[in-house]
Length: 437
Image (cartoon, rainbow, N blue to C red; front, top):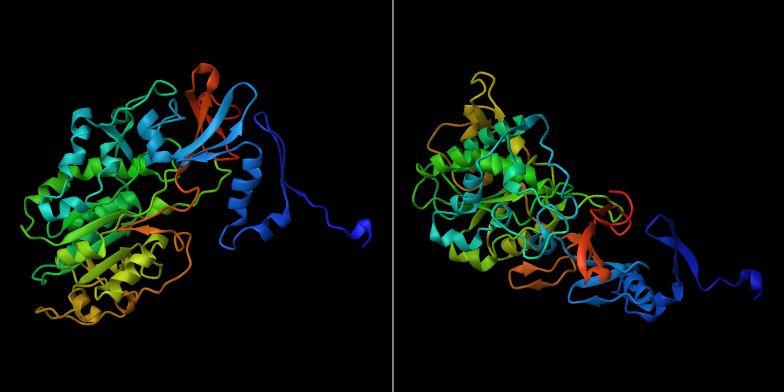
């Protein structure tokens, strides 16, 4: 074979020229032949090529860049980094953005009580409550922050969008269908955070909201969790009032933020505060006597969120019937004005809901709607997602590599003090780091 036809052992995969890094990343194709087939090319690059350069992975913290002036970048769980160095880690001087729907600030003491106030009143639901987002309001850093922090309670503003107003009315419409409904039913609401909160407020006089928000807000958050948090604080009086009218044994409504899996790339300048849903385990649902679940999405034509596929398949295979409904299936009746939202858009079709879903019928007269999604025919099917191959431990599933991670800039010349954050491996630095903010 002539030298011209001999493939080079290495090739340039990526070159970079920025203040922090100057050089090139090389890839050797033969590396793949020496590793198991289930090891990805990215992991080979990270764990073999980068390891050869002195980069290590220890206890979930990896060092993936070292600079000549004593600084290095260590990668860790984003939420853990926020708990350690503050909610706005790396963006301490940046403000939260609320847009035209933003309003006045809150009383700080009221905000610090939010996690307790939104705790389910029924003891059987409390173990399933995920208060992480609400707990951010009273949390204090466990280590010295990289820069002075503005308290989250001071940064938050009231939030009430038109989408939230509509979502609350749609929640009221679904709740009305639970009047006189048999036990054993539950709702999972999977809408964008502020709308999910408002939908929960609409449901709350007949169902008990169990919030499952498992991240913290950040000024550059991939997930705009600050809007969800602000919406919860804004709707807290509605939720409190509804709780006083709710039946003592109300069925649960598990509330998710559909933005938890928002799109993100390694080169982003955003803070990766994505997270996976902590849905109830099969054992928990059985203990609660749940046999039927309504899963609420923005529209009925959408698929279930990627991190729920395996859970829903397990539920159905174990005898729990899961059906979907789009929030858009509940529409305003022009004759009823703004206050009237109904399944199928009319009082005449509204009470055909359970009949359409095959879970009984109503004593009220109804006609079958023809202008709704086919959620009543839903059956989950396994499909490949970024979560498919992750390991499940009990009721929890392990996260994919690189999901919900952030880099911390550590300065060894300052005794290992954290001086800033790096939001993406090829993205920007925050506070005290190198390069643009």
